[in-house]
Image (cartoon, rainbow, N blue to C red; front, side, top):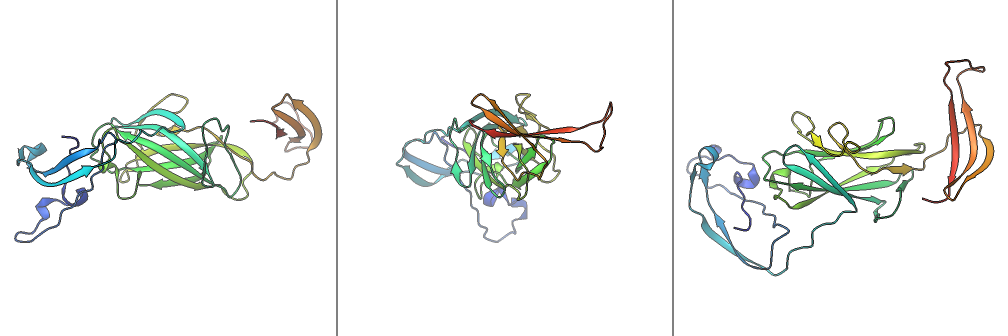
Amino acid sequence: VVQEYVRRPFFNAQDTANWPVGTIVDDAQQITLPESFDAGRYRIALGLEVGEAGSQATRPVPVGRLTARRAARVPVQPDVALDARFGDEIRLVGADYAVNGAWLGQGAGLPRLAPGDEVTVMLYWQAEESLEQNLHGFVHLVDGDGAVIAQQDQVPGPDFQPTTLWLPNNTVRDEYRLRVPEGITSRVVWPLAGLYDPVSVERLPVTADPDEAADGAVRLPPLKIAGDQPAEPFQAVDVRFGDLARLSGVAVHTSAVEVSAGDTLTVTLRYDVLAP
């Protein structure tokens, strides 16, 4: 047995208890071939299970044949390798970024975005066993203060392949597209990725490196937004920090004309980045 599906009728959506007596009903199942699927000839067999945990099962009956002419696919190798566990059955094994449709490769440095840009986050999931629950996924772009800049929630994975159809140990690609808001100022943002129950809206618990885990989500590598600069009374300076950057302006902000001990002020520095 290369692959086995145990599902309710018609894409895991029907219950046989609702079948009217004397009628003809349709059944359909979507079968995803595993990545280890080798070239060769295969039989498709059908059986029925009833009772608690399939305590009564019919003998499988051959219903078709298929021929696979291609060898197994090369496993997916995402640019960002991850090892985060969601609940007891799902792992997030990697991620990729694209800006305005152009995928970024390894060694691209800190990805830079501008207001209005579209950033694509591709996640790579693996289920360690068959899943009984349909989940929703999310990617939120958050800044250093935790403010959500953009977000997308969706049924994870390809169209018409909810989590209950994921094959154990198969890699599932899950794509999210987020738009950087117009008028946003420069900042560093982090994509937060996770899964949740769409009924209770409760996130699956995450087991990951402490630097990556964040309140039921995984913090992915940062992105730099080079946004609009506020009109500030910058004092011009010219200080170079090696080959990295040049300090070109300084501005001091305070809510009072005069300051005293215990007051808070903000110093804004403007750098011209020379190298990644």
